[in-house]
Length: 291
Image (cartoon, rainbow, N blue to C red; front, side):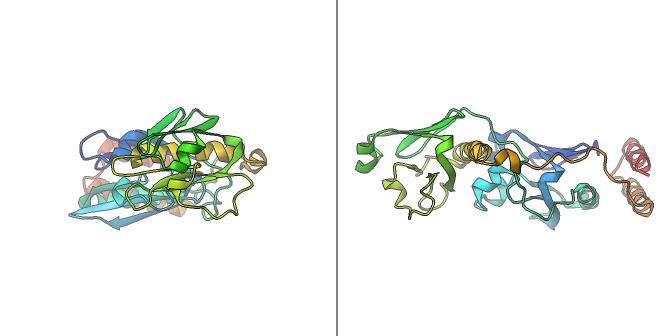
């Protein structure tokens, strides 16, 4: 696509195979988005795109990731607040026609597997090493193993007696992240061979660190969990065989009638002043090249 769509605190930059989502730094930008900085999302990682009315004269454009395509969203498991959703772009209501145009463009770029769960992660997680302070200990991940070092003033007697813990990635089958913004927030590691075991309280489990007021904050603990989850999935038995084959670079030619409709839509946006002469000409040329 080669275009840029700028909203409040977030900018989407489109190219042929992906969208680069950049998050601005500022007092109003959620800390999670500031911590992420930017994320490149291949169109094959998306299931759909939605355009909905926002608050106070805005519209919201949201790309919907395919289940299993993004380790960050997989770890979050639906717990993120709307304002911290990295797939959501908020724009002034008067830019709705332009947002609708780009929504249609994204839909046209979705792959044939858009409705199916992804067989492997397609969006990169933050890179190790990463660490954060929980209420009862410090969690560190160096790319190969997770270490929990307990705090004498916060850890339960069970954890203190068990001593500091180290878990290799190949010993883990998954994890459970519960947001620090809810009661019983924690990060629990799931060990291979113990998936069916009934988990106890997180504050008594040496395979878990407990969050609390000011500890294990979302912008610190969730990228940590995503990074670890990506490493666990990459190291799972059969992961290499399960990885999907790369999509062909060349896309199928569009229906000429569809191209004509899109050019008419571009003309309407140009007439309304939402596209400059240069943007209209460049986009029209791109569409004609697809015939």
